[in-house]
Length: 120
Image (cartoon, rainbow, N blue to C red; front, side, top):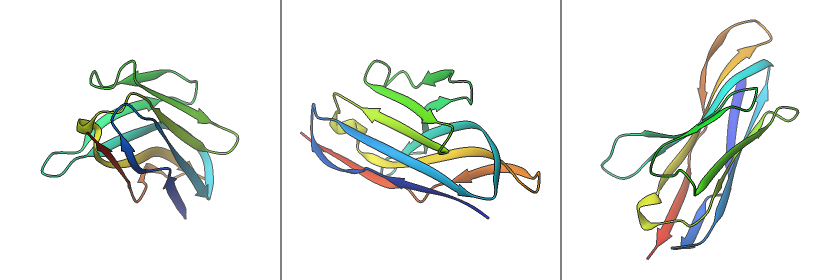
């Protein structure tokens, strides 16, 4: 089986920074796109950033210039560096990865979520 474990959330003041990590483990053959989503109370889950295995990235307009997604393919880990945080960035952040298992099955997997709270 495969699991994604996130870490790095917490409480920070506006203007501050946090770095989220998400490590995939288990019966993994390869990982295609890795993504970060977030869901604020009462709102739909939204895509924050994505990165391909080759390193191509894209971002939601609301975080461009402030957030940076990166990954370490050797350790199957994706990161989200969040700078200049704003109260509207407050949400539960989830990582997501399209994973091919050693059994050659493929599907998206989700982490458990990590809370990010930005105080004004």
